[in-house]
Amino acid sequence: MRRLVVACAGAALLAGCMMGPDYTRPQVNAPAAFRFEPKAAADTANTDWWKQFNDPVLEALIAEALANNLNIKIAAANILQAAGLLTQTRSDLFPQVGYNGTGERLKVPNTGLVAVIPNYPNPQSSYQALLSVSWEIDLWGRIRRLSEAALANVLATDDARDGVILSLVASVANDYIQLRGLDAQLAVAKSTLDTYAESVKLFELQFKYGQVSQMNVAQAQSQYQNAAAQIPQIESQIAQTENALSVLLGRNPGPIARGKSIDDLVLPTVPAGVPAGLLERRPDLMQSEQQLIAANAQIGAAKALYFPTISLTGAFGSSSSSLSDLFKGPARVWNYTGQLTGPIFTFGLVSGQVTQAEAGQQAALLNYQLSIQNAFADVDNALIANQKLQEQLSAQAKLVDALKTYSRLATLQYNGGYTAYSTVLQAEQSLFPAELALASVRAQVFASSVNIYKAMGGGWVDIARKTTAGGPETIPPTDALKKLPPLF
Image (spheres, rainbow, N blue to C red):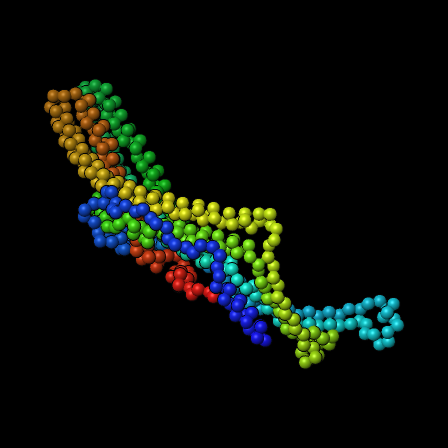
């Protein structure tokens, strides 16, 4: 008995041994600040920034997308799948208890030994009921390393869902802004078309009475048709944007409600932040790190295969030829077995798995480092785009004002007989595309603000996820998973 106790204590001590490296976060060479961060910036990105546009329709669309988007539902299902795998992997750390029962009735031919033995039961009955127990002692931490990898995969899928939420909110906002920009372009095109239609009527009337040549009429008609050709293109883009937005909302393609015009939207403030903070704010970086943790744990699981595996099995139950006597004392049966298995010659089977795991960890590390560099670049690109687009918007607005003045003065000179109609035509041909470009650039400025919040990540993702599809009650508490107590 004493030997058994000593053996069990030794096994428990050995269970604390784990093969492979423990994870430590790699050093990150982060810049001290973003290159193009403006001087005036908000304190934090931990806010539901889409409300700063001051458009209730946009807020309602984002809420609808968070509640109904199918990609979020897929991501939530992936979390549950990963959590189930974690439960399955961790279960191997504990004894597995099962049961089985058998019943058999057998008749043999009345020949040979059966024929000469008096009162030999033929047919015969036999019954058996057993409880079985099996347990693999995790001496070298193989199962614990696999559990560590499974936990990291759960957290990675949770971060992936946060990434879907981040992209979804940004995509809905960007598509809505693009839609309102196209609406503004359509209004410009229709207004210009109406103006050109009046010019065509006027020149046709003047040509009728011999005041202008047919060339003037043709010039006016060419202006009109040029504006008319723009309208179907813009309407097609509007329909396609509405359909894309409908899919994000979890709807079938269809029309989208409108709120404030692109001119009435309020530009959100630029959030402040430091590059190193992206490691804790961007879901894609957190997902990449969890994948690195999982790959690191796989090294220990592979190295543990070099060492022997000890398994304990046993059974306790009853066996009898009579069902009525199955659970009586004399029918009791039991057995227990210890099994030791280990590799001797595997011809690269184990070493190949170790090499594969180490290479996978190296690839995950490089991917993590690359993701960080891309994240820094994303933020800088979004900040410089926002800054330069605002400068472009200011210049484009001044260009439109100048062209309006040019067109007005050219028309006055033409009406006074001081210049040819070609001057008016040139002015109007420059003004129309400039007005279309102004509406487009204004939409791009708002979209660039959205892209800054998307690139920086932040606590706003946690705010958004509270209203996501399925609700938080259907998702495993990943914060609790991170705090799971160590086994053995």
